[in-house]
Every structure is written in structure tokens, then in C-alpha cells.
Image (cartoon, rainbow, N blue to C red; front, side, top):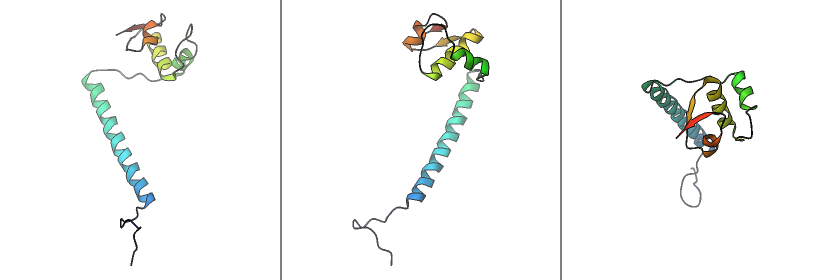
Length: 102
């Protein structure tokens, strides 16, 4: 006969719970990835690869700038490809070495 805990509830198997959570995360990631691909295709957007040139630019931007690596990479990509960044980020908007708009 299997005994439960004092509350009368069945004890949960921590490993099984972890596996269920990992399965849920994997499914959500797959859905998110699929949605992102569809969104990009519907809007005819282009995805840029992060090259060594972009990384070098990201960490040699003129003047002082964001410490956030993602913002540095986005800014470097825009500078090297003559893109305009659409953002509400005040630091990027104030940065004079990249085209940006909101």
C-alpha cells in the first residue's frame, strides 16, 4: 500500500515534473521560433548574421555608448550596413553615430 503525505495529496516526482517542464519549454520554443519565422516572412524582413566584423564594430563604437551587448550589436550592424534603427531607446536615439528614429 502506498502512503501519501500528511495532507492526503500524492507526492510529486520531482524528476517527472522537471521533464514535463522541459517538454513544455521545448514546445513553446518551437512555437515561438515558428511564429518568428512566419512574422519575418510576412513582413519581408531580412535577418542579418552576426559576423566578426560586426562584433569588432560593436566593441569599438565611437564615444561612450550602451554597456548592453545586444544594443551594441544592433548599433554596429546598422552602422556597417547603413540601416536606420527604429527604437524607443533614448540612448540609441541620442547616439550621433547611427541613424535612428522613433
